[in-house]
Image 1 (cartoon, rainbow over the protein chains, first blue to last red):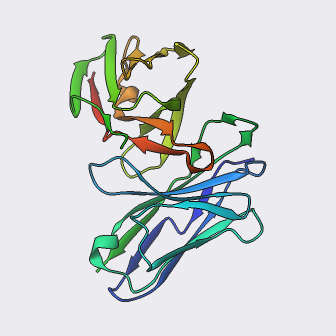
Image 2: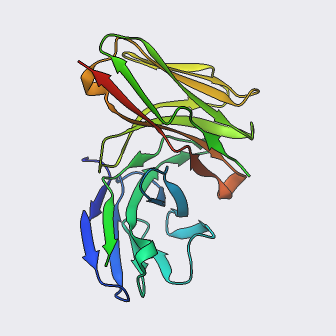
Length: 116
Length: 114
């Protein structure tokens, strides 16, 4: 197992375009998280899935953002009508929840989005 | 609302020095606390996780402690090396049941001078 992977690693787009990012978690992990990180800040929680169910969405996740995890494996994050303020690093993480234990989150390399 | 603070924002030390990075959080109702390392332009590498019932964890030259009641954690790095230069972030897992999530500090950027 090679860890959490994300694709693409970099994306440059023009304002108003739609973009989609993919995250492949560690295979046995049932929880998948999306975070956004801007320069000089820590990552901010966006949303997470337990298996295929999206259990929480941050208020940061406007209606232009949508995330899916159709079969409880990989996940996609789509941003519609991108704005310059969407420029950030988008990070995906996965973990395994067993009973009441909330275990270590492992992060992918991130997708750097630049909106021109 | 949970807030995580890491001070100072940056630190520069000579090689070989032992150092302590501090992290504080406002709400002691946490499940666990994780320390991460981030190299410029890269993702996060998990260093240590401390469950809320634990007081410390060790991995190699790293030791992390947790005082949940006072809302504090420290990451101790022994015999620092230039390769330790990176940003170190702490994050707490908090919330209720299905709504649990990580809240991060802004990180401490460490520079170890040869």
